[in-house]
Image (cartoon, rainbow, N blue to C red; front, side):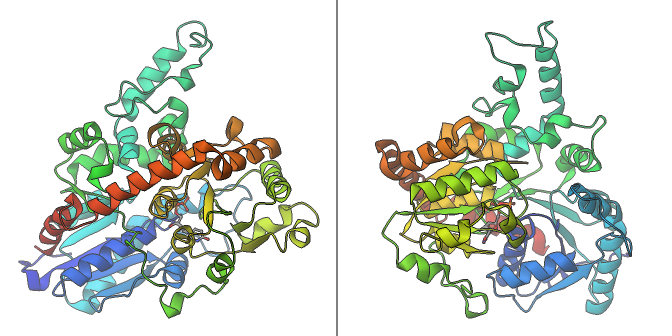
Length: 471
Ligand code: UDP
């Protein structure tokens, strides 16, 4: 693509989404926020058609006139049959095809608009964007969707491997005082001393050797991110440790904390086009304050079937009213007759307006996989959590919830059992410990609310980002 001299009136930001899990939502929200703030800049949002369909049917944003969404090819060959039980396959086909699919779609948008691309704003997982931006002689501004402490884990992958290998190689399988190396704390990484090796995403622990294309891509990401013009954080600086922030700022050209992109404080009313079609909110209106358990494991994570049954049995035995966001394909795993027997006690829906649900006064506990967005929606809703981390960043988030912020409890033994879950429900909903969690979560929410105000870092960093991408 040839580059002409770009003036603000010519700026055209290509936004490249990573179409898995919750990743496209905060990126779309960021792009919309930037587009509203810079009416003279054009934004082209590129994402696979499957992800775009899902995004636009569930997103609550109003699309600005200067932002247009484009579908890109997903890399899945025609007639391809997926191997059952290998969710990573779709992701890897996408990664392989991404440079070509996004390249073609960008060419189309440039031709349609008559404006060359002046900046690539991409999900940080879109590692190919680094080279694309270099070839196009434009800025690359990656957006880091998970928590900043996860970025630390990624950029220190080499040190993590070395330390872990040393710990394992002490001749005794690394066991010291009954603790396995996987339980050791990550003291060696600035700001991560409360985390343990077992909290790290698999992709970080596996690293580059003999690993999946996805792990290799994330490893490459940790190497190329320092070349980016700036990294944008889906977080507030105020809730992160200064050690981590200072360390990240020393590693990258610029770090902008623009706040949580999936949260608006207070949550706006649901727009009519995305109304609560499953009737969650009216159902909650009929329940007592702080009485309901809301259950959701996000958009990708799957709880093993035996644990799933234990969770259902515990809910039924507890008598606690529950609202369960449960993808339809999981319903068949529920115990026989569960749906009929609990039809008055609970409500099961395929999709809930989650941030509104968690902000409802009837919800008393959130049973969660500790997805990053979910955790912060819970904090803003002042709802303590029962944590069953499953994959990716879930374990690190769960450690923060329980050990650092004290606003939730990890389910006994780390997996759902009927008795363990009954105890956790009792603890959070009825015990003094649950009351203390509620107090702590209120304090944390206050920090978030203040950080989101006009004097917070997010407001200043957003303005700097606007200037950076408009040039
Ligand atoms: N979500 C929702 N309704 C549901 C289930 C999930 O709105 O029924 C939203 C939830 O509010 C959150 C996102 O999906 O914003 C899930 O993101 P998270 O980072 O928690 O988990 P992931 O899906 O990436 O594992």
